[in-house]
Image 1 (cartoon, rainbow, N blue to C red):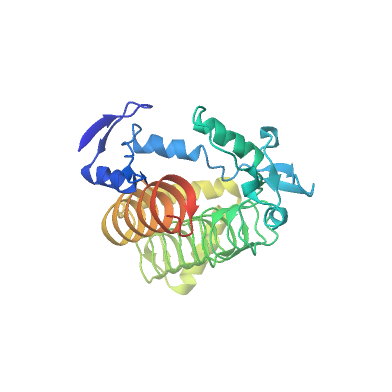
Image 2: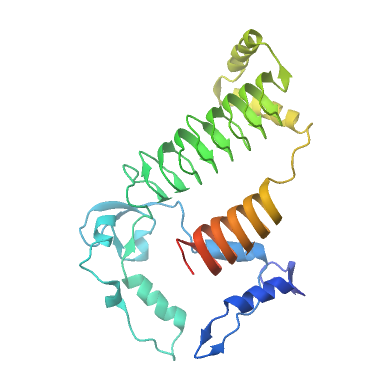
Length: 347
């Protein structure tokens, strides 16, 4: 184990023995000789910042396909003079990316030579899976339909606006973050399999409810925390059906306008602070540190992880194994180091 000082922020951080073992494991071998990857000289947070400088998720530009001249929305700024193709041109078979190849010059900077290729080879205007429909202002989406300003969403989603990191089955919703299989929901974070849920977070199987936190299978509830299998509750107080709907009508009058919603949100947050909640969200995890980790093993300082094993310093990934310093995507990736937005059986 070694303690180092970050070259950027002067923060101390630890390189553990299992970290060194990972760097040795992923070190490349050429002609029978292993070229060791040296331990990082930046702390995990600064390494994360560095990776995200190469990842444009949601800055969009009006552009033009350099092949068919059709107007397109692109993640590449036209002022950067990069070659951009629309999806149909990019996936046509009559151009070959190998045509842009060249011999490496070992007397010149590798990064300068790589930069020249990047400026010449065509880039796909947006990252969208085949089957995406009517979602021109969305990026890093898979089979999205009728979506607008929705980013990094996997699987089949439809009729979404202003959402990020949503998963299959989410539809007819606005302002969601890290939600899956949610329908007709608004302003929710990390909610799953819910219907008509509003202003809520960390809740599962809930419906027709408002301002919930850490609730499970609740229906017709308002401003409740830590409840399970409850109905007709307000501020964790049980009501009859008739009394609940009378109180709900009064509350909706208070919610008129943005300022009314903000006042009630502050009131509910103050109420939530009087209850103990889990320090982190982990389900079926063996040896993990971080938050929002599911069905995983041996996870260190990672966030929003699912179905992973032996990973560290990762965010927003699923179905990976033996990966360090990786952000976004995954999907059966293995032995990945210091990458962003890679996956689909990457090795």
